[in-house]
Figure 1 (cartoon, rainbow, N blue to C red):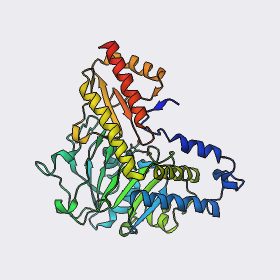
Figure 2 (cartoon, helix red, strand yellow):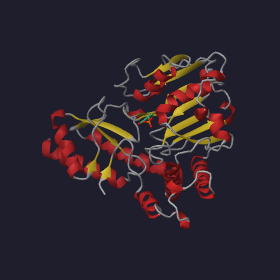
Figure 3 (cartoon, helix red, strand yellow):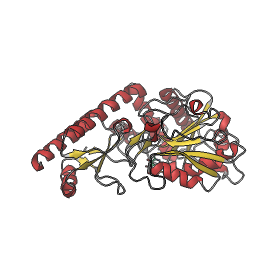
Figure 4 (cartoon, helix red, strand yellow):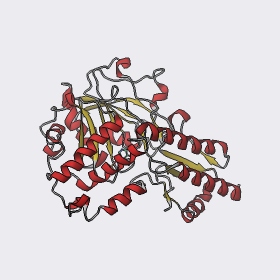
Length: 374
Ligand code: PLP
């Protein structure tokens, strides 16, 4: 198979696809495809329960957190989060960190539901297309983060898929004088690529279609004390307390997507878990960025400490060669390297399912291309 560098939906481990194919018409002798099972039946309940247990084990999710399998993607969460949480604080306020396109979309959507402020920004207050660093770099020096102590929550996007900006760590809100403000994190594009410190985050959510499975399921991990504050207008199916009380079966869940995500969790356990995949991801990113920095032919513009391990945007210094670079990459079995339209250039997404071998194949191709055109 060619190497697939798509930002999402993206490559899944071949083993997972093969297992899903082998079980397609008859899951474990049940005589049914998972697609055909009642979500309330014995078999699917087992699939769901195992998926949750494996995810809890992989991320060491504390017992005072619920794991919800929802729908609507991270885009729906941009509304579902304020609908559920903004009324937590009586002031109806929430604060947002702006570090790129996805966090600014979250910030924009939240404005429909309350008093929303920017606690820190990468510098482009309204237009974050060009953000190349996390506001982290400025903290806690000049212009340190301004989190309102009575905010219902603080939101950040820990890996900006388009800009390729990843927070090296998550803030300690107590140090900002806002210890009662829960941190809510959109981790969509690096979920399961590294460990999560739940002492810092009260809620983490992710659309599955990068590291965790097929599009259609959104994983929400939420501390239990945040439940029960939904606004009266919040759709019942999106009220976290309803979803939690019904074990994610308040309505029919995306059963097949949950099943494939469960297979991905088992695959990850076989790779040695999140610590092992995190080490592999660091080695992959290190190899690619080192090459980019050493080759005069290419350019990586993201501030080094904030460079994403998952999404690596880069440019050819001579952009007139872009078309040729992409066409020849495709012919060489290196797919979907075109950068996001708002950034331009190239982007290699090197999620969990792309091994070092795929990254080495990309580097060899880039070296070869540079030699031929340099
Ligand atoms: N947040 C991040 C970080 C993303 O990368 C994406 C999609 O790529 C989204 C949110 C939106 O996700 P969805 O399209 O599943 O709604």
